[in-house]
Image 1: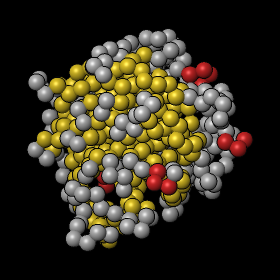
Image 2: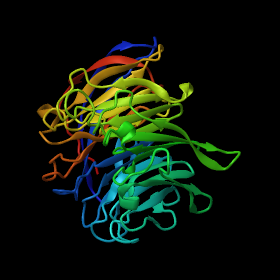
Image 3: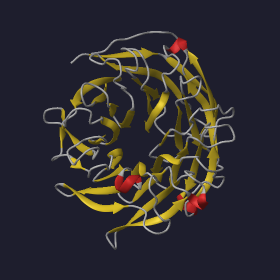
Image 4: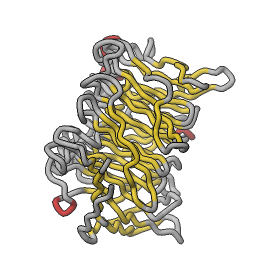
Length: 429
């Protein structure tokens, strides 16, 4: 199967470094566009990356969605495999994706196998004997109306799946463990503290780190009586009990109604990230909150652009590096919906510093309403960004961009400028 990857060579030169002796330059952007893609596919709606593998979701491709696996080979990201929706039409297969080493999980939030809008999730494993990604067992299926698979995350032998539609959209999340087969380990949901309500949407976002930490976003929870201000919950696995226990109930210190805190989450080690895309003094400009597990998951810092934009949706997507010191934030409605992506790095004083945003304009072949940053992910020196409204293959066909860095070790960076070096286009099979 032929695929097209368009490369724009960028030099993202760093102005300051917090660790002497190291420098970092982002030297390549690859715009992945499937050959058989077309208008309305929304390719790039979900993205994930782990080591030499990346996965991109296109939940409107064909009749029920698709995902595309890429592999870094010889310095280039090459298409390895496309997997079409294994269910029926309009399942929205690829609505959410996550990858961890040689395993990946794909959410199909509208799958009807368990009833209308039940949802499903499919776990795949790379088989090096024939160089393909294969499904592990059968799909995991939700109950009618659950939207099971609206969010997914995987780490080794554990996976977490959000189901925000459970019980009139009170929502729930489910942790699965692999022990020869994927079995349900625990169900997470609100019970009495706080009291669950219809339309809380618990499980709207989920993330897992290692086999001991998980976070669940509840973007329309009503803390302190503030409608849809949003909350998030951190869970820790107690090996002595063999149980997941709620470790912390997270709320924004400056919360107000309709912030949607919990619309996106990420966690790695002792750092957790929560997006609130409606927060801010500027209407729906967005904020991101960082919490520190070494201080009982207390609020560490609030991030927002220096110049917030009305309706920018900063925090619509978030990601954190495995090392826990680099954060990626998507703001897909900034710049007249062209979108933007911000990078933050932790310095030696414990402060998160903004690196100049990665914004796209006509010189980078983007246009208004591309929504660059609707999805983001990071792994080592690679960052992948979705722009699901890009029109390269027709209206809203979508694209995904991979940024590569020459730095192997994470470095706390203060700032850089993005300078387009040329407009070299390379088409790869």
